[in-house]
Image 1: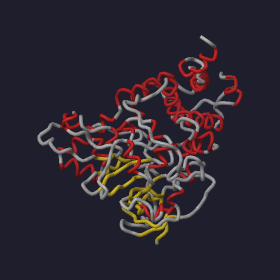
Image 2: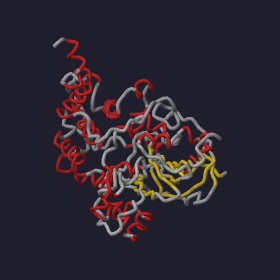
Image 3: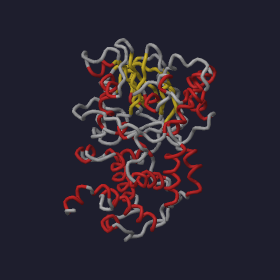
Image 4: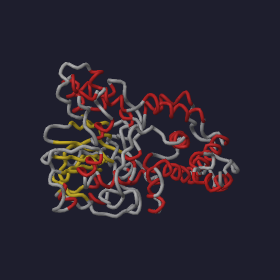
Length: 207
Length: 219
């Protein structure tokens, strides 16, 4: 194996510059007693295994099956969502945006990466990257096409730019053919992207 | 600031490229970067707005060619040096060379669940009644502050309608610079796509922002 070959694969080994830079910073902060490295493990575990889009799917499925809950979600999303046990960091001030036959909602943060962690977990890379942040507000239909979503030409599109501390959860429309389904089964149709607005809920035959 | 982070409506940045079955993290260092950022923030020496400004206030070439966690780490290094916890020598030698003050708080592993559950609410009481109400026509201010602001360039000097009066929130433009929380009413303001992008805009498009009261004037 040539030396050059090693360099081509530097992202896989210890020489990755960002890996080295972050390790150095962790070493410095730990030896100065400024952080507890075990706290990092707990944070990572929280967002890898506990807080993710399954939380949001539960909220949507409840809204689909319980009109009183849907009303509460419209009026006071933070409290309604907290009643299911989802609250906290980057979910302190929630708003729900309900898709209808008239309007499709799409959420973006053009200025940084604001995202409703408490219900969706950490944002995907594309949500934080310049292409989505630049285009969602000017060409939402073009963006949706890249996600395989084509809306009727007359459907209004409302883009919510998360410029303040409000965090938005899109409530997709409930697919036809799911009458009588349990909340758990319905939750299986609710994708992460459908709660950002870059997708729709899955059709029942695909679940 | 009119910085590289203010991306709404920019062109030429390529396709969105969603990744199928994307993992939560793409490398081990990203996990540590997230955790370091949260743990260092929990010491209590800077706020969310100062953090955002530390990330966005970069040369455009640097900002646009860095991954998001890379931007976080560069921002974190800046915050830690600004507040005296890490020195340039520490960073150059990749070890603790210089001392640091004892922080007010260190987030311990056992306290993480409670800290994440608590979050960091930014709503605050405002001493004055809301100036606008739902349905009011407004025009956003046109300004170009050199510091932090949350009024994107594409939404400056534009006519819109107040859709909702939210709550009082900490004002980022001052809070990012250690000039106080100065809470103001926040409003969800809706613009027709054509008001923002011109006559060729998608006629079905409307765009909303959440705007602090001082960003708005009656129209």
